[in-house]
Image (cartoon, rainbow, N blue to C red):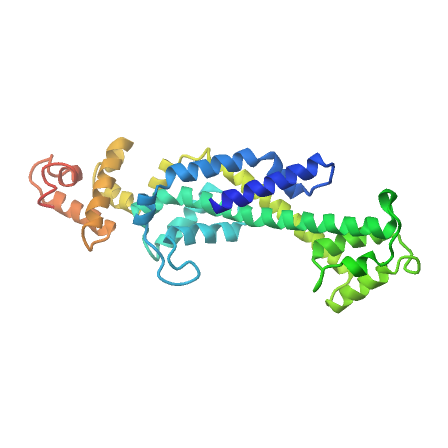
Length: 320
């Protein structure tokens, strides 16, 4: 809800700037043109992550994400290392690699997609806030530059910058916009040019360095927002059931010793749901439950009892 509120405010701020005829950055254009995609993601998160399901997800005990679901930490790491660029095969390898150290539960694997959406929305919120903050700083710089130069019928005020500049270090977007507006001015006629350079020198930088850094920052933000929006679109086209079965270690165990793979998806899901329920009611992991099912089925006498389903969802369940 918090992310949605911030993103909606950012969208409205950007739209208002466009309506007023102000220029916006490429990253802001991505947000403006694709906000409906963001709304769709937020709607899917609400539908696919009910509180009961969230409570069942194993939580991290320590570290930066202590108290958050373990799968959230996995999704966050994936997004951080790919700059929000989603690729199904890369994610598949990433999740399988994680499970060579610590197997994930069936519920966690189903939650990968929805958690990835949450992290992408969270990341977009962070970038959108920076876009809006930078735009406000540039707007403030424009207002001061207009006073300095006497734009729009105002009387030129050479001391406007000294009087109205915010205290403390100058924000990069504010300073860069001023540099841009005052670039052609004679320092003798506009003393604000000298004041600005001196202030930047005290901050350990220069106008040239700041302009370069701000352009790099804007370029990076544009790439990140583009990656987020593109990833959100692509995620809607992925077969997440197929993805789940390709990374599920429980499926791997059942496939190896039974006709599990030949069954239809609904039947396989019945088996997995039963393993989840049994795992929650014992100290055994879901993998251990799956292996025990196969061991029990292997020692059975009749063909029906040699099917894992007999022990998971039929008459053999009580004995199991």
